[in-house]
Image (cartoon, rainbow, N blue to C red):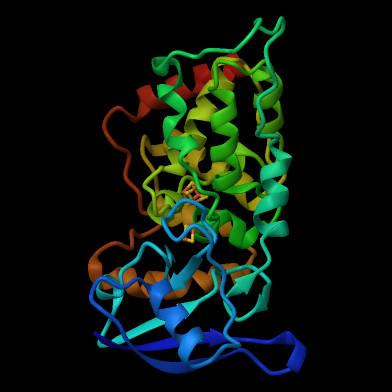
Length: 322
Ligand code: SF4
Ligand code: FES
């Protein structure tokens, strides 16, 4: 299959600006995007830099933006992604590029994963000999154990785009794995750590992380399970992100006022009523949503039946929190 590859090129050492280079490749239908990049490097341009290791979807090294979507280059067949004969390959977003398709994960991913301390601290007293865990005891954490740390959920995360301090769904998926491991002796300390500002409570439930995980691990759901566990253990939460706080406040006030969510108002109040630049950024979304009937008129929001009962439930829950 003949395909045109448009590949992001950037070399900070030669002072040039980032650009796309075009290459023609001819590969069998079963070839992956990584096969295409390798053919380019081996036969056309040995200076092309990209990263790959396992070549079987297990190490996360080859995470790239392919035709505008975060994907693993070694697992994605060209035939599955090609559009009008073209495959566009770029580094993932919001990350410093070192050269071409090689980027620096240190601040974006590794520091955040280390911050949640995702290693097991054995319970005391440690069992003598091997610590055998029954399969059913590990069933909970199986999904998170398959995480290959590709960082694609963080790339899609709506909060990281505006708040680099948010630890993000990739690290919190690792935290989940430790929180629910029956061998861990730091259960509550771990939950307290990830409930700090920048942790689980800074997620705004956009569910983008689920849509971006190439392995279907549903990192947003894992994060919510950590939250639920923190609530069960009575561990308090916190956010220092004013936008996230405004989002929570608006959400709560809306449901308290009318029994359901005023989505238009939520978008405006999350940005902040005086944040003109932030509000202007919403306009393209609103313009796209109007013809599809998905742009609810903010502030013209009727009360749903049962709103009073919902308000009383929230009042009661708030009183019990004090
Ligand atoms: S949860 Fe999925 S998207 Fe996120 S780092 Fe792990 S494998 Fe990648
Ligand atoms: S090279 Fe390991 S996941 Fe692609």
